[in-house]
Image (cartoon, rainbow, N blue to C red; front, side, top):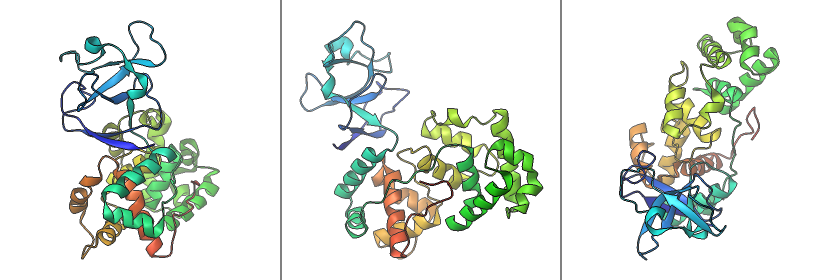
Length: 309
């Protein structure tokens, strides 16, 4: 089981992938209909193609597959030209983290970057902790803004007890003053009420958000008052498990990166964005390794936050 890096060289997969885009593909699962895949060119031993596995125009044996370009305006360098290909030759693109992909990505990063390899050797591989997608996690992240995770979780628990649970309807019933009575600041209480209203009315569809690509999902989250880049990025990373999210505004990530790379001082967000480029397109895994090292150096571990792992 392994991840392999690919860089798109042509425009045959527009608009899904542009020339220069990077992605990783895995050998740990078979490609399904609809997956973007990498495959060896049937007629060239030194060349890979990036296509999409699609339903064949006529039934094929189980061991064969049909691949096509998304951009139908380009030359037919796909199954229209060379016919079906061995299904076993298709490596599906990976976009979300699961335990298998996480382990593969850690192995990939450690094999390429001595600093991250040192993290793994010294501190081990962290658990893939996640947060459940949905309103409660967004509310928790709002409460965690500019405070420690432990402080945010404590306020979350008090608010949950006061409201009888964290749902849009229950927070709206509690009202802004009731939310404040649980120890929430006036500003954050206003954010939570507005967020609850948007979710309750369907203006913010969190289930649909799970199906959006990373860039579009981030754009939607940033349209909500009270959700800035840090909150959006951490939700995309921990709840939706996107593969390349890297919250450059996170102070622990800044300090941790400086320590891992042996820098004289923590990098700024802009510098952190630059420094993270070699870890694309699996920066979310690099972030988890760096957080793990940051906590371990301080005698801490990934917290059991209010929603569980």
